[in-house]
Image: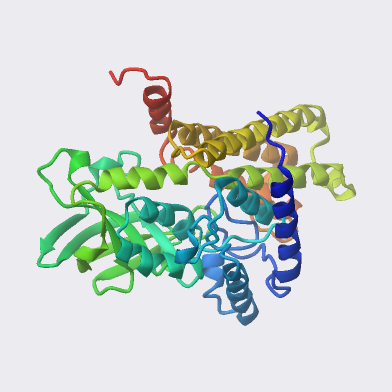
Length: 411
């Protein structure tokens, strides 16, 4: 396969680079002390969903100005059709745009709404739902959360218990969601609910769009082991959701959600994020400051590990390119997305361990100021613990690869 840009793609890549240089707000700078999100597409030092509500006026205005600049070209949601506020870009151009923004270390806007809900609505939503929600996402006016996981229903998502009972032209929802990324900063959430408790697990679920300002909703941030609050739990107490906010058929929401999860697992974000981290580590190890912190007795073994991590990152990059080439050819993400998710989550852990080994006892420093590389790998090591089950556990991904990819029997 030849992954080189065509002349048209190379021209587009140059245009993206020029746009970032000219339009990214000068006052919107990375802040390593701020809370970091766990989303793969997030850029170190930024959290756009939180930044747009920041009490720091410059940071808030910078986040909103960046969204407006991208929206002028339809680049908040580049794959959305133009009639919904996007740019109508093909899969390869969308890939180039995401790659260049992440390589420039500038934040994406509205990740979950753009990357997960948008493609789901385009595939399964009504025209009214598309017209209502997609333009607001494409303008960076609303942020979305994903209300899937529950206490006791994470990897085994089909066992979810949040209940929705029909009452006239609305559903009355009761239950709880947990590990909802950026839930406390979001305006809306897509939620899986059980509408037929008597049906077999996957056949009694519906997919709803929920306004998080609705009466009866309580959002509580969850503090992680780093001391940050990148996710939340959401409680529903007799929350009324209009029937018009159901995506797809009643009791067929599981199949709508599979579209969402396919896009969640097929992203480029982890590749660029890992490359930034590895490059930072290599530069630090070679620097004068690095000689103070890096264990002298580990440099020979560390050299081999750094080379191995670089090879693995290139493998992950090629997996992402393969997935996007399939998408460009008109095919939906399938088991290839699970391969990327599995390989990427386990690579994340190996990369974090490599960084921790390099710093020895300094790797235990969690405060950022004064720590080597601002404790980047210490925090990354803590983050990486969760990644083999974020977006579906490694066991689930292996099952998908075995049954859909290798066509092995389920029993």
